[in-house]
Amino acid sequence: MILVTGASGHIGSRVTEILAAKGAQFRAMSRTPDRVGKPNNIEAVYGDFEDPKSLEKAFDGIKTALIISGNSMPGKRCFEHKIAFQAAKDAKVDHIVYLSLMGSSPESAFPYSRDHYESEKFLAETGVGFTSLRNAFYLDMFFQKIGPDGIVRGPAGDGKGAFITREDVAQAAAAAALNPPVGVIDITGPQALSIADVTQRFSNLVGRELTYQNETVDVARVRLQGSLNDEWNRDVEIGWFEAIERGELIPVTDSFEQMTGKPPCTIEQYYEEFPQLFDSLGGKQSAILDDDMKRRLA
Ligand SMILES: NC(=O)c1ccc[n+]([C@@H]2O[C@H](COP(=O)([O-])OP(=O)(O)OC[C@H]3O[C@@H](n4cnc5c(N)ncnc54)[C@H](OP(=O)(O)O)[C@@H]3O)[C@@H](O)[C@H]2O)c1
Image (cartoon, rainbow, N blue to C red; front, side, top):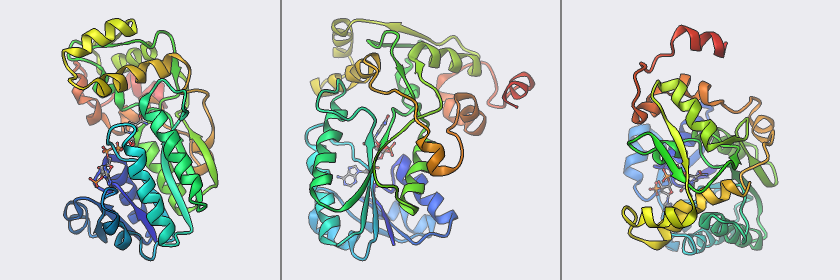
C-alpha cells in the first residue's frame, strides 16, 4: 500500500490520478480528506504533519510513503517533515519518497532549498530506505512570476535553470512511489533555459510580448516591499532568482526519462497538452495551436 500526502495539492492530486489509472493500491492523505476522497472514489484519510496523532492512522499498514513537501515558512517546514518521517518510521514503512528540490544545500540562495537540505538530513537520520526526488523549479512558477504588464522582474541575470513542468514532477513522483529508486535524484526538464529564454518561448506561444527585466537584489527588495509584507516572503521571491543566477538549477539530467520511460515535456509540448494553464498570460492566439506551430512540433 502506498501513501500519498498533500493529496489535495497540485502534485498530490495528480499523483493520485496517475496511481488510480494504473490500478495501484494507495491511500490519499490530506488535511481536507472530504475534498479528495469521495469525489474521486479513492481512500482518503485526514493527516497533518503538525498533528502527529493523525499520522499514526494515515501511515498504518503503508509500505511506501510519498511525502510531498508542505508550504509552511522555511525553517518551520523542515520540522513538520521531520514529524512525518518519524511517523513513517514508527509505522515501519519500508521506503519513503520525499519531494525535494534541486540545489538543496545549506549554502543555497533560496530559503526553501536550505529547508529541503534540513529535511533531507532528518530523512536520512530515520534510517528508513528513502528516495529524495530533487525536482528543478517548476516551469509553472512562471505563470505567477510574469506580471500583469507581461514582465518578469528579478535578479537572475543570464542564469539558467532546467525547469520542469508540474505534470512531469507528478509523473516522476508516481513512478517513484510505484518502483522506488534509492538515493538522491535530480529531476529536470529537457533543457537549461534563462528566464529571458522562457519568456520568449511563452511569448511566441501566446502571441503577446512577454519579457524579462533583470534587476539588482536591492532594487528587487525595495520593489517587493510594496507587495509582500513579510521579509521571509521577500527572501523566497528574491532567492528564487538568485538560485537561478548562481546555476543551482542545472545541469540537465536524464533521470526523468530513466524513471518514466519518456523524455520530459518541452514548453511547446506543455502548451499543446495543457493550453488552459497559459490562459493567465493573456495573448491573442487561441488556446489551440495554429498549423504552423503543429508542423514545428511534429
Ligand atoms: N520546485 C518548485 O518550483 C516548487 C514550486 C512550488 C512548490 N514546490 C514544493 O512542492 C510541493 C508540492 O507542490 P504543489 O504544486 O503540489 O503545491 P500545493 O498545490 O501548494 O500543495 C502542497 C500540499 O502540501 C500539503 N501540506 C501543506 N501543509 C501540510 C501539513 N501541515 N501537513 C500535511 N500536508 C500539508 C497540502 O495538502 P492538503 O491540503 O491536502 O493537506 C497542500 O495541498 C509544495 O508544497 C512545495 O513544497 C516546489
